[in-house]
Amino acid sequence: MKKLREYRKSVNLIHRHIQKTEPDVVINFYEILAGLMNLRFREHVPFVCIAHQFLMKHPDFQYGNGTGREEMLLRLNNTLCCIGATKTLALSFYPLKDFYRERMAVVPPLLREEVLQTTPEDKGYILGYMLNPGYADEVKEWHKSHPDQEAHFFWDKKTAPPVFRVNDRLTFHRINDVKFLEYMQGCSGYVTTAGFESVCEAMYWGKPVMMIPTHVEQEINAADAVGAGAGIESTTFDVSRLVEYIPSHNADTGAFRDWVQSAEELFIRHLTTLV
Image 1 (cartoon, rainbow, N blue to C red):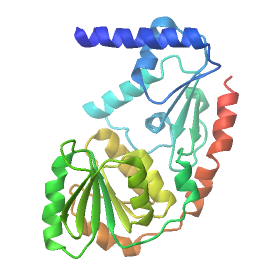
Image 2: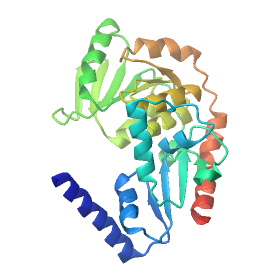
Image 3: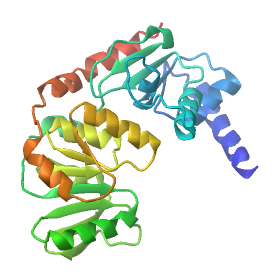
Image 4: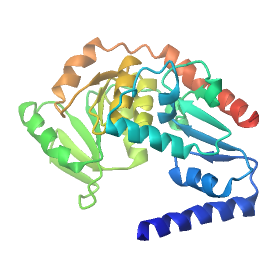
């Protein structure tokens, strides 16, 4: 009941803010409370919902079509986020035709300006990102057998210092967006649990990616990214698989870069033509 009261307060807060500011359009980046607010108040302002997960409704999207409990819950969450939406913008690794029946337009990922303006390098180290610090033990065990491989992992361990140096070749860093991007710019390959945005950044820079999904949303992201040429999937943080894969990775990023660079034009078009 306490949670329901908190949700109700949040829904009311969103509604009051829309009433006060009278926006031309509201953009919802995959927030279920915005959908629930529309269900309760039926706002008349145009709503645009943006997320990669919305591709699951596209007839040409090959992943996430199973009947398992987790996939069904994910599809339900997608539906709740989109209640009252004027249009949905489905972020994608590659172009697909717009799906007019669902008022869906397929658009490129939105990458930070620093990614678009920076030239990548290869400084020989592996970069990793883990939300669950428990995976650090797997990485440490792997590194004992590969002590010459330099590796930097970003983790979300609140009690850890900003930089935790295991040895001269293995370092853990507390999550920091700016620092993370600097390390990605110079890495040889990237290990991640398959978050959409960072995989897109790696693809734009031509960095080979090894994805280790931990739940259904990441499993769909990983399968889609592998199909788009981002890299490989794994079930463990055995970084050797990525190191062995790197020489065979096709780093031709031309088509993906062209797609990403069309984002500004496409987003402006879709946000200014809401009928």
